[in-house]
Length: 443
Ligand SMILES: C[S@@+](CC[C@H](N)C(=O)[O-])C[C@H]1O[C@@H](n2cnc3c(N)ncnc32)[C@H](O)[C@@H]1O
Image (tube, rainbow, N blue to C red; front, side, top):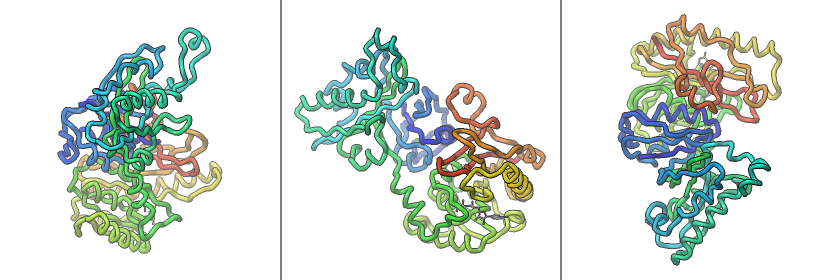
């Protein structure tokens, strides 16, 4: 079975999450625990072959970094000089459309068309010499051309059709558009994955529930803009990188108002949250009470304590913890780029905190137990960051550093945005302090 995953904006983290998740054993998501083969990957999409059919809707809910899950229908060859609509000229037969894309719906059909690039160079305008020889078209006109082609075929067979196309100068429909237009219920979203010499046709099986993520973030009774909160999607990605299995207990020792705890519960973990700030723990408890009712989480699956992470070893001595997943304090928030001396001081202070807490974590983690943690990275410019100068101290404290993406895979996927120490950074344009995601494993 072949599937494609449309990656989120921070595609390196999205891809790392998929690599860590797809080979897990999770029958509810159709994951058998057997190897999954990567067929294609780009900044936009990952195409894989799985040994068993996946259950897209259940899996979609567990992936913070994937926007859509698609089922691959066909793989077509194309000459580099051919436009996509030329390559697909004979593809949209009524029988193909009905069999693979629209088979379940009888009323007015709503269908959308999106293109994802396997080769991002295709978005560049054709060079004048190339256009002289082959009358190429800009890729941005292709969704309309291909959509109209499919619409014409369906209209001729007597169907009433509404075609939903991406906005001007974009190639794909946002998940919100797919949801709001009920494309998956009343028709289909047809996706074209375009490489230089290959085209995949695919059908959207599920899209990320953007409304639910918004609810989990903004509708909680307590928020804390001052300390900052981790976006639920990023929390989910980090939890998926923990290597822990559903039913095991994870700890967030800098839990703030409880985002990691709520997301961990949704993924089926038992969760412990602690924070030095009593007020934060009160907020966590209020939030989780709301969350538990809304998401039907059985009581007794989580617990909070007010505690200094520097002393957490004593407190949890007898608890069985599989992994620690946390956004530690990131230091001050800045609205303009701080002086180098300030950054150096922050890093020094945080390193001394990390050293102390890692000593404690070693007391409660099992061998191979992981720490997945956000640490600050200061955004200098596009893809330029000042990061913590060294993480070598962790080695001396009994931890191995874990690559976010294995060096072999990173070598093949040159487009990934990895730091020199094989971590990735989650940033937002409007923020100076970004989050570097680092992973350690107890030796
Ligand atoms: C960036 S916030 C975490 C926010 C959290 N991820 C959320 O989404 O709500 C960092 C938290 O670390 C806590 N903190 C700072 N120093 C600590 C320490 N030594 N032990 C435990 N918690 C600490 C702060 O009180 C703050 O709530």
